[in-house]
Length: 272
Image (tube, rainbow, N blue to C red; front, side, top):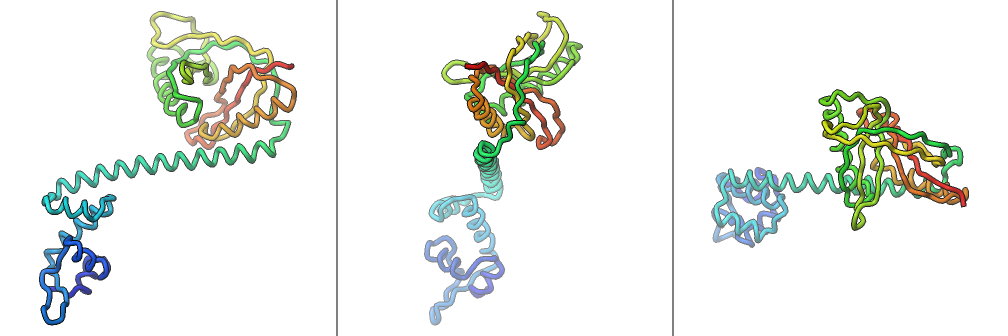
């Protein structure tokens, strides 16, 4: 048998923790010297200790750990619990990372709103364009709602074009329109010259010209586009324009790394 100090060292835990587990009945020592009160443990108890630590690290309370151990959880069941908890933790990490990116995007919006240069915005006429596109509904205009909708649309659009023998003739263009109950109809398209056909499993649409568009270049992933849109909004208001909506996003460059994306944002405006 091993003294409590040696057992703590072998199990990579503290003596204080072993005493606490003993008090809770989670891991009582194999033997207690009646004269000295010293605790002694057997090597076989390391298996139970490992189960206690694993279950605790899964986020269970010690009371829950004791209940599970009393039910004699098997190694296979423990592996299943670990896999489930791993999936939950990975989902939480993904959500937390996305939340941090949104916070950083809002901070950039604050900074850019204070320091944007007038030269960044160009007012111009946008010519009409024909698109092949797919559409779907997003819950809102928030980046975390738009991204998961528009990315699969583009992932499906290009294979459909290839199967139909339709070759893109220009840039990818995303545009949006209000849906019901605050939702957004997301259109993911690419420039083409093809005529509409009932044989296609995608739409051919003609976007009209925008006679006066305030445009600005956004660089980087689209999950940070809020700051650029808000900079454009400040410029529109400060220069006496009024927005007519019809926001379009023109993908000018789209390398594998989203940090290198270049997107032109177009917003229809009028004076007065």
